[in-house]
Image (cartoon, rainbow, N blue to C red):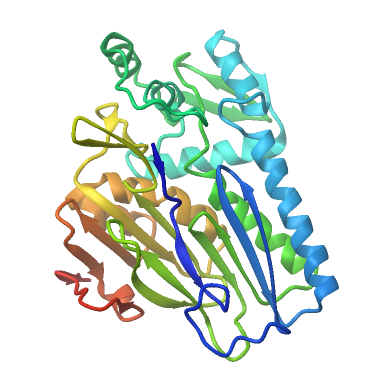
Length: 347
């Protein structure tokens, strides 16, 4: 399997997209969490203040990774085991209860196309492992998993307890957790007096403040070429999320099978190479940038309708043929790469 993180090039001196970047003004720390590279940059704060605050952020990322891992022992796997055993009123931490409540609401808004209940299907397709062997699932097992039709609507969450009416529900927060971690990082940095920062978790990016007298500038990765599709300035409180078939996938017999599964069919989605959403400043912008990109990606030709459901005006889609569709609001912010032109600009 090829792993190309949902990369958005960070336009700081380390990415080479802006000149004149002062090393005395920028602080950068990297780590590897959530199965991807994470990077936090701060601007115009002392080395000691930045290092302390970013260190706390990276420790929080590690905590979230361990607490909600989908296949290694965690609170989430313990909950999945209890659901599979048919237990009712399963106690969970207040944090997990809040995350599941939020994820359930996001799923309902998007016709359950964002579906963290699909853990069994994700495992059958081989995406619950760090040592991947490209193979299609056993047809009988796949058919049984599809027929069981697990979805977030099967869950009842109340008083920090979870009950599922469907024992086939197996939770995987991989399409939610990176965005949630962005929001947690922003809260920590603000609490530590960091006003200007850029947080990148494998291509899910959130900006705080600015980079001096310039906005932070990021690049949207081209889904088929090793270069940015476009770049744009990212303003205080904005977040960007991308879902694409180039992020985690394998090829077999000339076919590409990506990790984005369509809950209607149980198969890897087709018809779209990538979607990118820009979330304007609002509560939980990071979470929405991650989770909402799934129904927009899976929505196919209805992608704009799904973006509107989440109050998102800034969106871009690259279809299966490589044609670029972009909303007018986002088009006005973008600088496309050389030779790249959108085929359609829509309201």
